Amino acid sequence: MAASTTAKTIGPMLAHEDFPGLYERKGYWYARYKVKGVGVKKSFGPNKAGMKKAIAHLATIQKIRDDREGYIPKTAKEKPQTANDLRATPLVTGSVKVSELCDDLLRHIQRNPKEYKDQRNPVYRIGLIKREFGDRVAASLRPPELADWLDSVKNDKTGKPLAPASRNRLKVTLSSMYRYGKERDKVQVNPARDVKQKKIGNGVIRFLREEEEERIRKVLQNAVDACPTLNKQMRKRLEHRIHELTISLGTGMRKGEQYGLQRPDVDLERRRISVRETKNGEVRHIPMNDDVYGAFRALLAMHLSRKNRAEDMPNQSPSDSIFGIGDNKKWWIETLKKAKVKNYRWHDNRHTFCSRLAQAGVPLKTIQELAGHKTIQMTARYAHMDQRHLENAVSFLNSRRAA
Image (cartoon, rainbow, N blue to C red; front, side):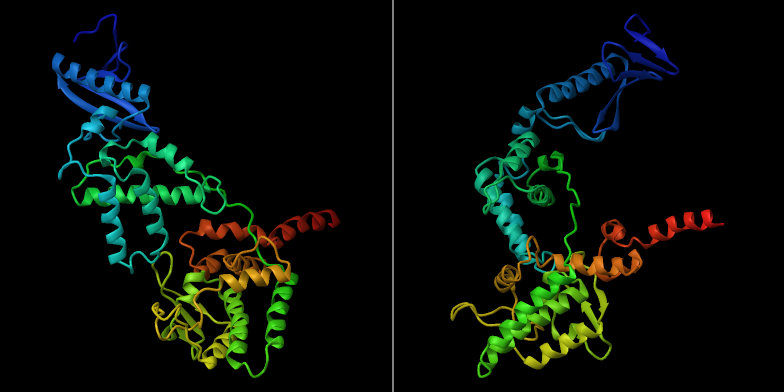
């Protein structure tokens, strides 16, 4: 196509004014556009045939944008798909429904407990997805529809919309379901991939003040003192709680990491803990301070084992588990109420561990290694806890004035 009133030359390119994104270069026609700020360029060949194909391509993309439905490709290899195209997309094994994708992912998770350490929450999320979309053809779901549903899901306990982090985890489960389906040649699309994540603020770091810890320990010790001396097993379990707290505050382990410890993981001779069941899958080693060392010695001397939930529900924990209980939720909540400590969770012991190290001037890189943070950015949240470098900086002004 020669230059005319509807086209203008830009260097070696010939851009078309009637169709933004359409241009000719060295005899070939191209279409270009942006998806979330990323540019995509696709060639359609020479002559009028190439131009018509490029125009049709851009028209389809514009329709998807106007309708706010469908899929705009992020690479030149993919094809744009309107909402009707997605509904009519043939599946490799027929019209696979969402329920089938849910069942496939659920089986995969349950068969790989080492890869998926959390065997409870994913099952719950998959159940939510299956109840809502189970009868739908998997390829018929669209990103806007999924986004609206994610925004509408309520927290079972509060009845309020899911917190951003919970919504994001549900969205990840949706995407994992489609991704696993694609690996098994059951679907060709993943509409959840184009649903935006919600931004999560770091919020205020809640850590335990010294006076709060004193009140908690007093409540725990009072329970031990009030227990009849003859009731040795109950007394042991009450003392057990004090050691649990000491180890949590002195190591910064996540709850699952702490209660998943087994006897070979605790080396009293070298005073070192090997944390194997970590969030990022990498083993880390934590040295024991004197308090933690003493707590572990006391625990091992108790010889407590985890109880069965019922006669027909035997405990599944390893026989060499360090801790005699696997869930501290009930006694911990009761203790916080008696100690009058509000807005504090067991996980905040981990924040307390990191905060106290930062306040003591421990380098952030060291805190990252001890806490097992995957990135230094996670640890940087505690940087403001150590104000000494700021105090030292402004002190130079006093020195300069005195001079």
